[in-house]
Image 1 (cartoon, rainbow, N blue to C red):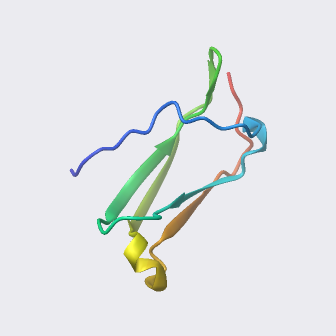
Image 2: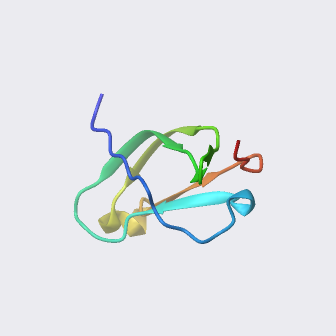
Length: 83
């Protein structure tokens, strides 16, 4: 198993129930991330969504833009609901 990176408490102003997809994008740096799995969970006040987990084999690097490795889109099949 490789490294696990956590990005928490990210600010956004878009209504959670209208999110259809998230695009993860490498904009700078020479290092590459190789993703095998990524999870998202949304919070608002004391409510939270389920954990959405995507299995993937994606290498992201800003230097690989010409090879199609600069971004990856994760689409949510259902509307995100907070409980």
